Image (cartoon, rainbow, N blue to C red; front, top):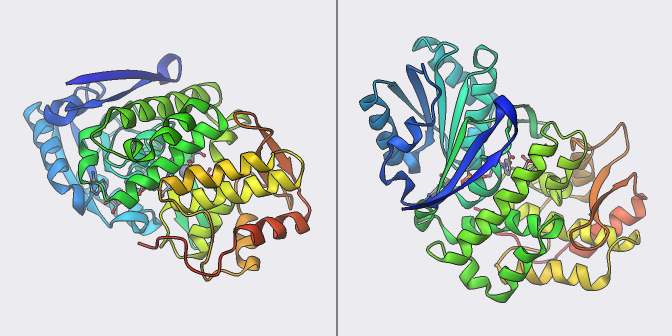
Length: 371
Ligand SMILES: NC(=O)c1ccc[n+]([C@@H]2O[C@H](COP(=O)([O-])OP(=O)(O)OC[C@H]3O[C@@H](n4cnc5c(N)ncnc54)[C@H](O)[C@@H]3O)[C@@H](O)[C@H]2O)c1
Ligand SMILES: O=C(O)C(=O)C[C@@H](O)[C@H](O)[C@H](O)COP(=O)(O)O
Ligand SMILES: [Zn+2]
């Protein structure tokens, strides 16, 4: 077993992200991260992660902590008010107090949900995150953004609630479908565009190696992406400014997810969203043609979509973009690049530039990969 520890936050809110292999071979690694005095844990998981959740629950019981297992619907169907309410009911029925805790075991949908339930139960109990997808390891489980969707849009209800620890065991990725691995790489590449160009170089050098869950290159990419996220959220946890850079590609990406009824993976939608915003940056004088081409090339090399051929109209996508959290009043705000690694903001772009950028990513035949 080898482990890299990456610290996030400062003071009382500081916690560690453990990245390595074989970490969950000893499932008590998770119990040991619980604060002293925890006597009950709610282990939230989707059905595909039931066996791992049981092992973590057994380890907790052996340490004298009562474990309540809670299976939730898979993927984006987990992020609803109804599912959250079901978990609150369970916490109430089982008598969870402020000194008890939640453990999220699954992809980003589960860590978002588990984090949100922990943030809201009794106004906040501890949560340990055990991400089991690449995307959740490099992004969703780290940094304390938690939330659920509403009919009006993506992640519209949520809270900032930092975990007390995160365990990223790369060995669990060997069962992850390749399309979900690629979706996680979209967020890794995002970190490359906004902050760490070495990530881009590593992917471009050997995309197949980058996507090998057993390989050393993927481990380096995970560690680099987690470091980018850790640095940004440590500096600006509540997204007053800097943290917005982690939202690169998400304004259009979230709109695609919503308009497509969450049949697109988040990482796939963000991949197209990054191409959309690169096109917008080029039209508004921020980014060179060559850098836009680099976006398409690196994403395509990973099998990610760079064009949108869904059923959503421009009007529907434009309305959904208006609900983005970076919007101020009626003015859309985008994270754009002034060159690779130099993110800035573009506020209130002309509608003609938005439509032209949309035309540049609009494809006639399906390029996305619905689940
Ligand atoms: N909070 C944040 O900062 C943040 C950051 C990025 C994304 N997100 C959110 O994360 C979500 C996307 O997360 P995701 O891409 O992990 O999707 P997901 O949670 O839907 O997981 C993808 C699929 O993989 C399955 N799975 C999980 N682990 C597996 C494993 N080890 N082996 C086999 N199958 C496995 C899941 O059951 C699911 O079917 C979105 O809702 C997005 O909004 C949040
Ligand atoms: O951590 C952040 O900050 C991010 O924006 C990371 C994104 O990858 C993530 O998808 C996040 O959930 C988007 O947040 P939202 O505020 O746009 O809902
Ligand atoms: Zn994201």
